Amino acid sequence: MSRKIYVVFSLTMVLGLLLAACAPETVEVVKEVPVEVTRIVEVEVEVEAAGPASGYGATLAAIQDRGYLICGGAYAVPGFGYIQEDGSHVGFDIDVCRAITAAIFGDPDAIEYSDQTSKTRFTALANGELDLLSRTTTWTLTRDTELAANFTHTTFYDGQGMMVRKASGFAELEDLDGGSICVTTGTTTELNLADQFASRGLEYEPILFEEADDTWGAYEEGRCDAVTTDKSGLAARRTLLAVPDDHYVMAVTMSKEPLGPVVRHGDDQWYDIVDWVVYALIFAEEQGITSGNIDTFKGSGNPNIAKMLGEEGEMGAKLGLSNDWAYNAIKLVGNYGEIYGRHLGPDTPVFIPRGMNELYANGGLMYSPPIR
Image (cartoon, rainbow, N blue to C red):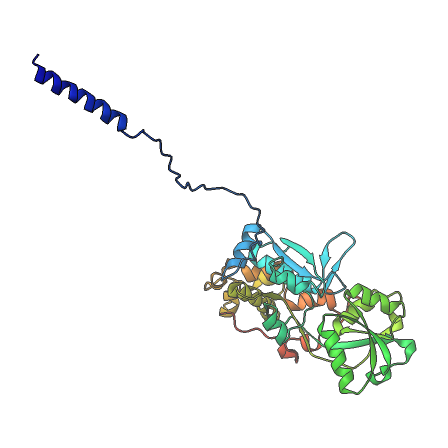
């Protein structure tokens, strides 16, 4: 190897070592990277229960799926709604419910009865606890518009009255000036009483109770001079007093009280069904058709009767029912007159003369539109 080459090689080696010594040290760099973490948290939340079935056809569908009708009423009013010793429910309002369920199922006893007070009845209906309210309930504008309630055809035309003890000698409202009167609160009775006494310039002390049983208990105990409610209710409750003949109802009528079945807003089909079952009961009485003779009217040749009995047309289908809907209601429960006579007629303890509740042909207000 020549000296020149050796020198160059040596310089190259030295230069290489110097460059290696001056090279920077390797540094490990840690970079912070944000990481998104998803956390699953279980939270208990109160969910409001679903409301009642609503919309056209929803009520009938719910009843048919359930297999029975839920009927709300008052069951301490002889003649209208009462529970017998054997546990069965009887009365005018009860039979209205029985006729409706007979039209639906062909069985008048496919019913669950729900006892309702004056305070609870409209709330229970609006909440879907009931399908129908049949409970001596007065039809008013406020109730019709503000309580989500639809009143069907009136089944009993009534008026508010006043009951007193015979020993009192009271004969007219003026005799009660300054007296005390037992009344159930939250009713049209309470409002009518205030209006009547104010319009006559009379003063009185209202003794108020939420439950009708308490109202009547107080009256019988002598805690008030008189008791007021619909005249039908006075006649019915009088039969439960210890000595009914010691009490009488004044001749005065303080208001108009149209009573009848009530349904919820929002389901016109159900409204129509309840309405037309009541009309069918009235129409049957108009035609002389009873539970006992209804089969003899088949093939009568009367087109209106044929339509009602399901022999012609599709009247049942228009309501969402079978064509024998009216036949079943009348056959299994009776016409309007039969129902009235059974519970309020002259052979009953309550006995309320029909008066305005007679057929229109007899001077009353009961009248059915054509079933066609």
